[in-house]
Image (cartoon, rainbow, N blue to C red; front, side, top):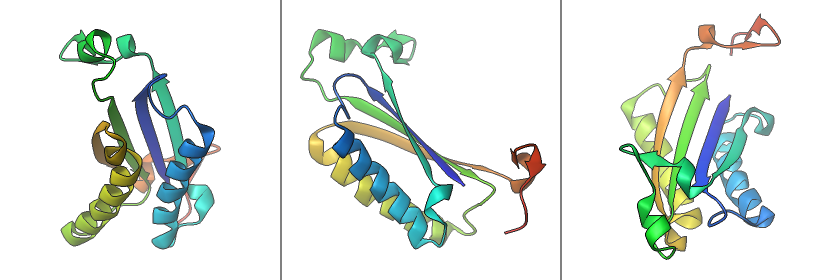
Length: 134
């Protein structure tokens, strides 16, 4: 059950619903290509004002000083109850993520950081019940 959180400066990025949907669709399609049903993949766009983003204890001063500076977007991929089984699978996963990020972020002149977190199945419940086996 992937949960993908996209933290982005607002209103400089992802202001158009069609743009957000295309990005989300590419993420969902990536996961369905691995055999997951589409309803497992959740994509959240989390808009943040520039003065809500602090790096090293400082707000995004670049954006405040020069609105033409590239926006920084942060993406967290949470894999809940499913894990990548080998370094090779991890490389393939990130190759696909790189393609999606290039199309929806880098090609638009934004900067991006992203990472993957994996939670074991026994650390997840739905409606108070542990998840069934795969």
